Length: 100
Image 1: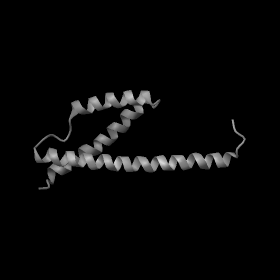
Image 2: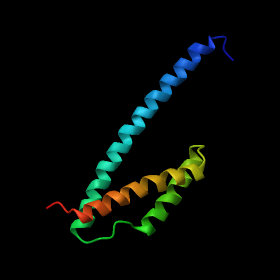
Image 3: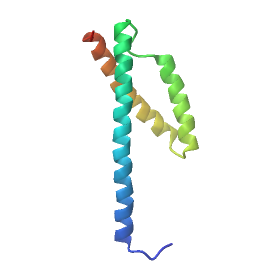
Image 4: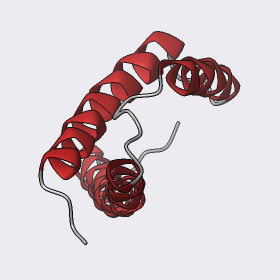
């Protein structure tokens, strides 16, 4: 253990957390840019907004990754389900308002 000032340590840790949060936001934005393209493609070709088989495969894969990363797999699944619900909402919107 270090004798460093706890306030300094806390500030440093919070700085790291802030940087990680910023990176997560930019990664999520990039993910949604990709899924938006998927939604447009699906809408253009009359494909369904959701793909339950793909979602189950992704959940299994992410849960394995979470275990490897020492992250609660149940949390990873909840996060994925939350994100996918938003993606499906976007896909349905794209189908309702197609872009030529």
